[in-house]
Amino acid sequence: MKTVNQKAWFLVLPVLLLVGFSAVIPLMTVVNYSVQDTFGNNVFYWVGLEWFEEILHSERMHNALGRQVIFTTVIMLIEIPLGIFISLHMPKKGVWASVCLVLIALPLLIPWNVVGTIWQIFGRIDIGLLGHSLNALGIDYNYVQNATAAWITIIIMDVWHWTSLVVLLCYAGLQAIPDAYYQAAKIDQASRWNVFRYIELPKMMGVLLIASLLRFMDSFMIYTEPFVLTGGGPGNVTTFLSIDLVKMAIGQFDLGPAAAFSLIYFLTILLISWVFYTIMTNIDKREGM
Amino acid sequence: MNLSWMAWTWPTAGFFIFIALALITMTVWGIKAPQAPRVGILRIETTPGDRLFISLLGSAFICLAWLGMFGSPVYGALIVCCIYALGVFRWV
Image (cartoon, rainbow over all chains, first blue to last red; front, side, top):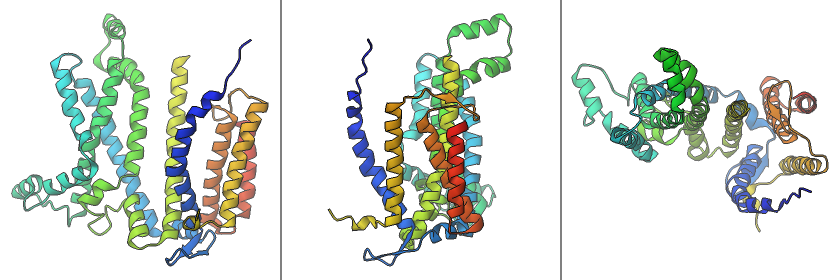
């Protein structure tokens, strides 16, 4: 008779405690703050769901959400195809494969606020190589005053920082394809496009979904890099959700509205991540059949 | 232990007790009557735990949509949430 021992679940206990202290208790506190108002000194007044109503109808929140959705969509539309393209053209074997991998991985090793600082200096019109050169060429580029320039700089910065992740994941997916597939394609005289469409892309689907999920979550929660680069400006044109949330919670000390904002933000990310996760696990199961 | 920094209220405590009870009930139910995962109308494989998660997450959005459209109180939304959760457990 087969016996089942459930004692292994005790091994999960340390993780549960850690998650309890670092995530569940703070989240409970945020829920508590979201239905109350405070003027400091740890004194709270019950307001019910007022902050949620206020945030849901707040133009400021709608604008920040709109900017966030545009930012995430744009960087994903650039990073995912670019990552696939680069990974397809990287050497598969030999010294150059290692050199390329190290070079590609470099941006991922740089801390986020350092990336912001690098681009902040790089784009400056007085001493920055990019800003100064563009202006010398007669292009009116100033990310401090011009909204378009600020957006372009932030998008290029994110592409520079994070395309590497997509490349590395796709590269790993490509390396895992057995040679037999390519040999069969060669016998069938398949074109380069068909090899990509019917062999490489389906085999990369799992890692591509992971890359998309990671890039979605990271970009939707982005804070440090745009904060260091533009501080949300000029005006509010690069104020994304996280930046707006920090302004509300720490700058204005509006803990109640900020807590309601955080919960709506959290639920949105949870929903989209769950959709990605469900698609991913279903693809895995279908492949496993 | 002083928990005043957590700013507890009875309604929020009740909310978390409800979630904890739901999780405990599902665990006990899972032990007493284990169920195999099934594929429902969403064409995805779900366990009862998954269906609870889908019910809770969906309910949160139903309440937010209600607040956005009709404002508080959200009693109507709670009724819709219950019907939604029953539907999820029956068909998803």
